[in-house]
Image (cartoon, rainbow, N blue to C red):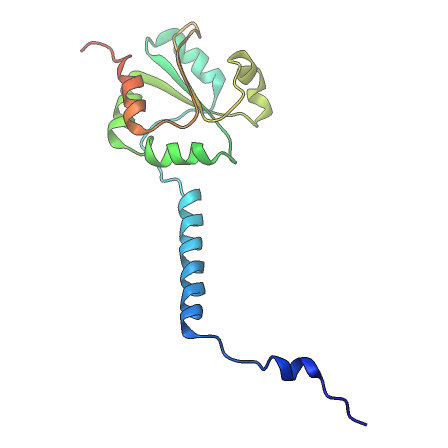
Length: 159
């Protein structure tokens, strides 16, 4: 005795409408493009240092302030700042001429003392410190290019 599968007769397989195929393909392409853009960080012309000991030696002979940028590999707002702020030629020119730029990964155990010293609890955190390590300005969170330029131009030395 043959039994008929009732589920196959109720819902016959049909091909989906072309609109849905195009919709889902477009959705996939847009999602992949957005994911790539979210993680993309272009190179920039800022001469970043990540060696805190060499910066301490530079401070003795150098009158410029130090720009400390606390970040993490997982930090999306940090990536946005690297893409939108630090990749800008005007910002790079001011930073390279007026500051000792130091990028600090807060997850690196070697930077634990520095993170605790400046009481950094979130990323991105941008500090401008003088030669003695005294904080002159602090910005917590993502800031846009216009605001960042306002902050760094306050410390431009007279020409």
